[in-house]
Length: 146
Image 1 (cartoon, rainbow, N blue to C red):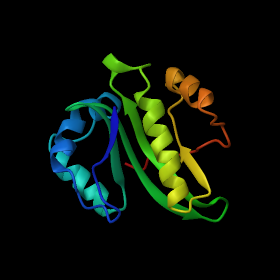
Image 2 (image 1 turned 120 degrees about the horizontal axis):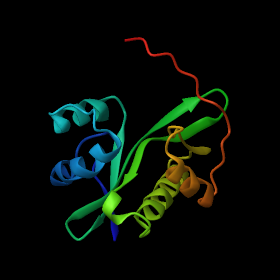
Image 3 (image 1 turned 120 degrees about the vertical axis):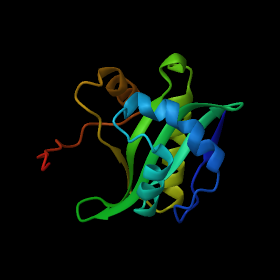
Image 4 (image 1 turned 135 degrees about the vertical axis):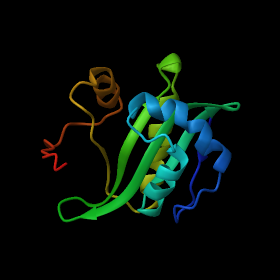
């Protein structure tokens, strides 16, 4: 298993063939993404997001969408928008490997924190995050405006 950075440090798609291959796994977490997945992701990359994948051979087994954010209470943070492993390949180490890559990347980018939000219904994911040393540090409140 290896990690592929789909985007470079400026958000340019450096590995375009992998972006299309990521869609099947990414939709397992985000089925609401529009039909034109590649165009939508390119818009998200232009706004600062980056993508990395765990791959086995030519198969994507885990997807991470992330960005660097600076705020007043944590400083510089690597925030993970999406982290999902293929349902057919879970518990084989892909998520752990990708999360480890993200942590290393955060360190190399001078981040003080690695953070993500996880829906309250994702209890299996929560067990994984706890095993990986993450803690619940706050509540996230939101109000849908549309």
